[in-house]
Image (cartoon, rainbow, N blue to C red; front, side):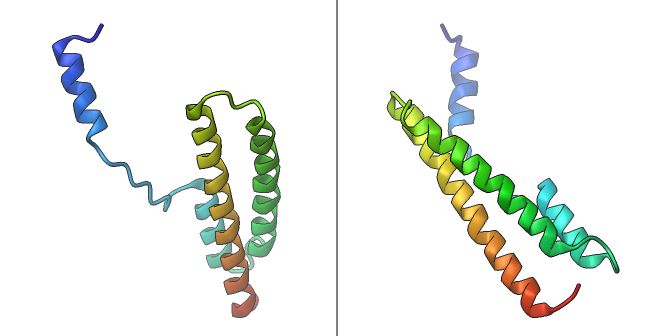
Length: 104
């Protein structure tokens, strides 16, 4: 049972909006570093490695689809898949941009 203070805290939390810009995630920082460090790591190789990891994760999440028994489970799986697909698309944009730019 929630206390009055707990209800207030819950109401405040539920009214907040969390828009994650993902500008500080580890992969993004690795990519930016690879692009900006002279004679640094191969940025396209970093992108390829990330793509392979994302594709593995897509397959793992897709395996969960058949076991999703509730609306909440189905929504969680769909959310995860859509985010993974967006990340894969973004990697394509990064790869295209870096390929057009030439060696980093």
